[in-house]
Image (cartoon, rainbow, N blue to C red; front, top):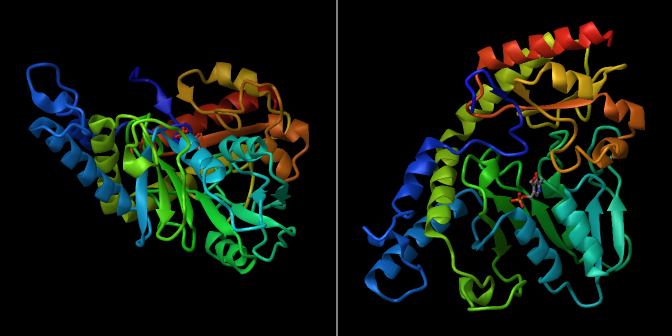
Length: 367
Ligand code: PLP
């Protein structure tokens, strides 16, 4: 990355932690060392690779509740698809309820299921009311831990309880919270991904509570106990595991650091309105708007700052963000929004420089 670039897009992805990179290197070898072995082979190097995968599984499990199993996947999109498309719902309860601000992985997998759907409103704070009524026939409720666009933290423990009272399973997309917050309580299924917690891209996991039946999404060689066929990458597993172990050991320090950065940014950008709840929020995410802002011009004036409008997946489509519309913003207000995403490696000096540059550019536009 050029040294003058300030990276403030940690919801889209996080940089690889040096510890995670180091852990991967042994498993990325060429013919000179046996680290390239297939972890599903029975010979000695294969068994060594399998052992590394199991160490990583334990490390990832340490970020998740006790009493469940970790199935490695290619990322959270796959984990979410498996939870929605390959977990049998309780008898007679085919419907799926999900919050209006779920990631497209949840929404589009739910649509693809062909089952009856219910969208749960979030109000202007971007939070699902824990007393929300589920429609008749709902067998799966999906609500995320932390929203990727606006950073709001949902009352997942209470929603999981409500889902269980209705006889439904509860799926939590914990992509933005895993390794940063305690795991969501009460969930039956949890999706996580390494690249949002300073691990490598291309690996994630589905956590399944003991006793919850799950089937495979893909068919093949029967790896991961028949639940996820395909050769695992020991390097990706080791990187994910190391990133998880590091995150677990630094959770409090990371939180304090991000809280300080968010307070600094809010102070400098004090004219900007915050999108979503002021209090129930992850401090690494600030979604702010300013009347009259021309976002494409701001991006071009602040080329050395990597930040985004809405979510990385949604931006570039030209459509107002689905999440910002769900919290009641008019299309024009959505277009006036920016997302600043801080991470473990973001410095105070970078936040100060970036926010002052953004504020000066907005003022120069007359916003
Ligand atoms: N869920 C949320 C909240 C996300 O932010 C993302 C990534 O953008 C995903 C799911 C998908 O994760 P992955 O990139 O591992 O498929």
